[in-house]
Image (tube, rainbow, N blue to C red; front, top):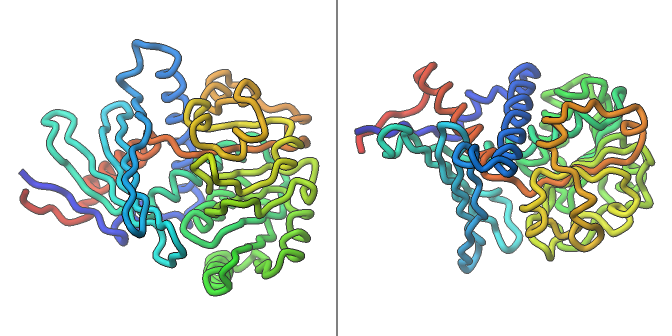
Length: 335
């Protein structure tokens, strides 16, 4: 018996994120994943093909360790992520273990640091492709970690009209590092940092698309700053006591879209505090209904809230294993 081990560099090579076509393939993968998840919630005969139990957590002195099992079609996996409970520049350490469909033995283990960010950003891109104005030019991203970087890549893939990116982060070092990285990868863009609350407000007033990728407990974005036609992707908070955006941001939104009504009811602090679940629209159902957003939808304020559903991990991990085997990427070790 052997296990394929995929490192951070292996995963980055397999993803090829700066290739717009590769990014769009991941967006389509998340569309299919959201649809499969919703079908499984609505049809008992399909439940075995998209299973996403609620995550389990263990608290340590410095981290909240999350365990997320799932199954999507033929891929069964479990992701383990350690979320720092204090200030940290180390990102979110994580791994995904994938089982062999036939034997039940471990088939592969991979570094999930980038994958977590990418699958979340690809999910946000599904909503953005549906609801952001078609000629969006200004993107504002709050946060400067892997999630922020992945969201920029994915937003540019689904809205190539973007020509201006503003990045806000409380820490100046990581903020400037991301500004430099994006400018290097996309030299045609105007990329700037918002270093103060006043600069953040000015950028928010211009933004066509806003992505919040922070671990804020108190709101850092205010609804009064935003255009009436803005589309927001809010992905940072994952507990009821976490709030990236204020009450006005939620209450002034005409259409709230979620990755999972059930999961957001347990974990989406901003939505639970300021809205009712019967007013939320699950993105898988929107995609299954194949209802193209109207022009009115695109010029109204929309918000996509994602707390992450674990079938997304199985989806992207299964794709990574397939690509790795096809290209003989990674290290195969006896076990």
